[in-house]
Amino acid sequence: MNRAVRRRPALATTALALLGALSLTACTGGPVPATGKARAADPASRPDLKPFYGQRLQWTDCATDGYECARLTVPRDYARPGNGRTFVLPVARAAATGPARRIGSLVYNPGGPGAGGASSLEEGMDEAFGAAVRARFDIVSFDPRGVGGSVPALTCEPAEAEEPEEPEAGVEEAPAEETPDDFYDAVAPLYPRTEADRSAAASGARTAAEDCEEHSGPILRHVGTEDAARDLDVLRAALGERRLTYLGWSYGTSLGTSYAEQFPRRVRAMVLDGAIDPSLDWSQRVISQSAGFRRSVDDYAEQCAEIAGDSCPGASPQEIRALIEHLYQRAEREPLPVAEDSAYAEYGGMDATAVLDAVSMAMYTPEDQWEPLSEALREADRGDATKLGALDDEAETEEETADPGTAEEEQEEDETPEPPADNSGAALTAVNCLDVPHPRSLRPYWAALAPADQAAGVYGTAGVTAELTCRDWPSGGRRPHRVDADGVPPVLVVGTTGDPATPYEESVSLAEQFPAGMLLTYEGLGHTAYGRGDACVTAKVDAYLVTGKRVRPGATC
Image (cartoon, rainbow, N blue to C red; front, side, top):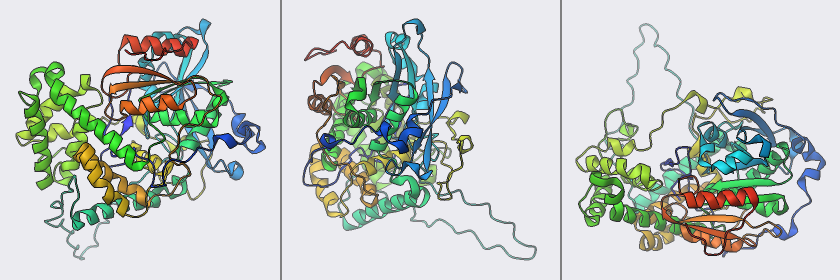
């Protein structure tokens, strides 16, 4: 739904406001079986894929000291790998700290979809791993196809307008068009009940889809998770690994699940932390995640004093809930004021969806985010939402800017334009909408509003509305299904009981779907568990990754 599902080196998560959806599937008449039983022959044996599987990575020093970088070339279309169209993907690694006892490479995905793995590693993501794992493995990650420094990369943003030419001497310049007075008056409601509200929501979603088609059309159909999982196998081969050791956070669990289904006997060990259940259809997924956020906001109200102390925006849980609800209602009537230098200033302030996103995203890492959220809510209630809008501000760095010139060959004339420094919003939408088709008719979305409201309030209805972009998206081949990965070794699924974005119930379900799947329960708040400092989780995950030690049924940290 309308929430990012990803991680960053600081173990906080970014809001990809108003873009993308976690729910992935259409009304297809219920789950259908996966196609693993009829798997094709080993793709590495295909003559047209041998050039990709036969490549070896050429490592050089990254811009950041202590890391090595390389580039991996994969076919844009695995059905036609010899047509010359490719993705060139950045790869980065941190060498094992105990080379004498090195086991091999451990590949991770930080989440998203839309998070760049190579850049996250350079920013210190290897420190999220336990010392035992860092000693025995090279920690490796890559930017998935279309993401970050991938060439080509997704963009849904129109090119910047050219500077107007100077008027000729003696020619009177036409006055610039003024923004209509009512331009900012149409504030999007969190629950579109009227025909006018629904029409506006559908129109805005269609425009967003059209922008992506216009600027990234040639690659939109080639950025799905199944293809990214095939890239992961090419990376495995390029690293010289016979079998893959993998850890995926959040969306990375979808990537790992897809890999396990396509290449079950190529898995050495796999940890999926903060799981996404592939058997849920699009509306079920909206309700699951929306309910998770609603519960987490309730947890914030109940436990704010314990974690955020005196900064809490109310003296009781009831006061905190009332303040948040009041801000939503105010923002639906009129955007909340922000300072002129705020990113929301050009929109006239923060509308209700922006406020809901800010509150929701602060649920990812309570230990880091609840105190600044509390202060921001206090100020927003007093009439200044600047801090609320800036909760997730990130400074741009030169390293974040993709450099298409580093590709090994120029792309065809149908190439996409250079993406913005951070294309995570476009990637979030593109991957989630493509992975499984959504309904083409508007009726299923409007029908889903009432159940979503009942299950998760405005978090649910806003999530349903966010799905509308996927209505006009190219269709992929995936459908809701239970995992089909016969032959895969025991997979470790880690679930956090208070996870807002990937609710614990989905981890329980995914662990049950894997043959000999194992579940490690972390009783805590926030998104995902491994790498957030809990010694129990670190010890159990590290022991599994290093030695294959299984986690007992009912294991809890």
